[in-house]
Length: 258
Image (tube, rainbow, N blue to C red):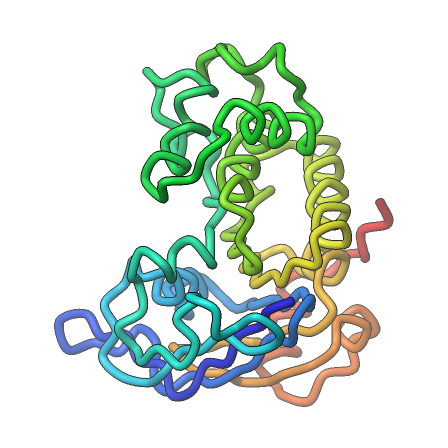
């Protein structure tokens, strides 16, 4: 299993530090959450990790068993090489916007395999669809023929078809209704257990974070405010005034029992 170590991460846009000296670790096989108000830099962290945001400083490294075998272990802040991207895939927030509307599910899943020169595409695609609970009957459908939950399952299959050890989740259930959210969360947790995956998940929904994540980081203005266990957040055992304010803003949330 592989984890992550992030030291002094900085992302700057036009002189504004969206992420400012952020450091944290994700243990191999751990599910790690990032919460905070809108504009705190949560999603920017994920984009920086997978090479979609420009890095102005800091370092990112894979840790754990197998972290040195072509994964980019010890890679400095300019993460984002082809080998790096294969090891760290992302599931985006919007299942309606993250899939090409004119590509079939088959083509959506075949594309990453072709980019990374992975053979046995036929078997990999069928296995990926089975793993996310869709089956082969969905293979030649288009995104507009799928429900929101089905589209997000395709997005998860696309991220996992390269067999990455680390999965980045950017509000993966926020665009789905409550019943479908529970199904997708259960699917993600089952896949993490089966594959020994490490998760880094961003969410504004504290109930979702406390269900899926073991530890979490609270962010404000691009910096870490507090690190705590999910159980402590659910029990409102927090240390900082800002985290307390987040709890009050989300008053009435309950831990998801799915």
